Length: 178
Image (cartoon, helix red, strand yellow):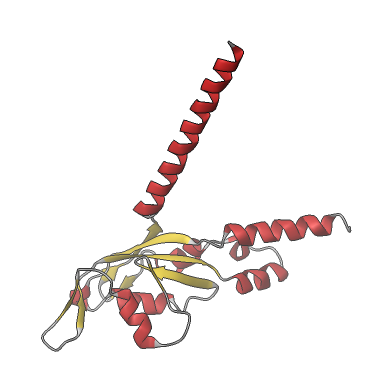
């Protein structure tokens, strides 16, 4: 029993560490002309239980409850324009968010016992509530998104660097053998 305890703690810690980064999620099907804007959908997604929204359109979401700060952070796109009244008008019909399961909610759900919800990812929970939903005449789409281009480039550079090191080491080993 004592030996199982450290393993389970390590396993739980590993699951939490793996979930630290969050998932990149695509939300599509918006139509600002019908009133379904990024701001409206994002504010609704913030209220989803067990989910922590880390960023919207690759801009970190403020942790305080300052509504002005949150709404201004959503508008980092060149497609958000200002109308004649000085209000922001968003013309985007999709956006990306990065979310993860809330660690406290995950711990609470695992203490209640194993269930499908305990192992569900942020994407699973959001998609279950919003994918295919008709809202203001629009059909929402919630899907896994590709990693951000900068993250993909970083991974590519790392792989290339590792490959060059491996090739250099193989060349050195060949020279030593001769």
